[in-house]
Length: 450
Ligand SMILES: C[S@@+](CC[C@H](N)C(=O)[O-])C[C@H]1O[C@@H](n2cnc3c(N)ncnc32)[C@H](O)[C@@H]1O
Image (cartoon, rainbow, N blue to C red):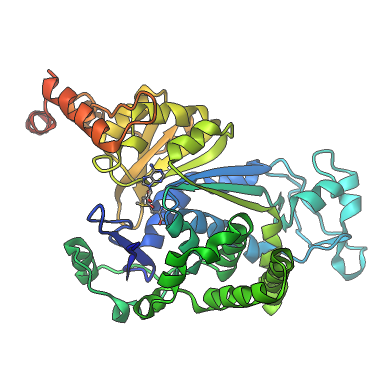
């Protein structure tokens, strides 16, 4: 029987405990907060929105999808604040007094002679070589001076049940404390008792609907999966699932009995995009953003999926279990593989600051830097880039010295097929036989001399 142990974290989002690893999947402060602070905010996302026509994201270790959802939610919120109705002929007004374009796309100027103060989009594009009205139709909605970029997310995880459950997971809950369940994990209890709380963030429902529709499209057999059905119907777990999306899923299941799979799928999509999306005008506007978002997923070992792909990404989120538990996704060879799949101005983001991970990244050819968290005023992870100028918080002299100690000996996985246990055993042996200084010795000497 599949074990699924959810609990509410400090920001009201659901965290998971893994009995297999006796570890938690999500951070102390909150699953969503972590996703924003470690993956979305430091990702240079605003620059990407301004400068790219397509943003390609690889989410390694998707789990229940917080990193992908937060990334999409950020873009979603950003655009929905500024987005205006777009029809074939008219665009909204943006007065640009200085007549300056801040990016590749031409701004849209107010046409005072035009009735209703609206601008004919075809005339704008007639004078604009970089983007045509046809492009606009294909590429998306208008945000300030920008065209909404195409966003493609590829999500990888080897646990298919988590994928299928991910759209059902509640992503923000005000009264979450009363739902805590008793699980045998001291860490979780400690975190829940901690007085520090974070702000409640909520992912827009439409993102869950969208991900759900993409999962169904690719894996309609989700409803034959008895484990999923059982988990979704377990009474004491229901507080962790969004009732709206469960309702949609039930409607879809019932349709299945009356229509062919294709007919029911069309009905299903209709329901999502036309009923829910048109619930309000605001939501309707947000819904149009999905025309430019592509979500694909693979339920298998991430090493295999990436080796078989030729895609190059702007952003790679690496959210594997800690290196000492899942070294196969932190090895030198794995980072070499990621190097080949990252754009020249792309970025890998991870919560890990481990010396072994950082030295593997450097050995694979990356420049590395810290991820800084303003809320906590401390470094909370690592970025790896090919273009050094993207590093905002370089490593300190102390951090660099640490990489040369035994702690900086990296994991190896020559053929990218080894088991975690074998990778750990090989590194332990290398550490044991190493003549390098130990990290504790290094720290003592460093602090004594400074
Ligand atoms: C810390 S959790 C990730 C949490 C996730 N980002 C989220 O938002 O829920 C680590 C994930 O790594 C996955 N995993 C472990 N080994 C893997 C592998 N070799 N390939 C792909 N995924 C793996 C687990 O199934 C688990 O979901």
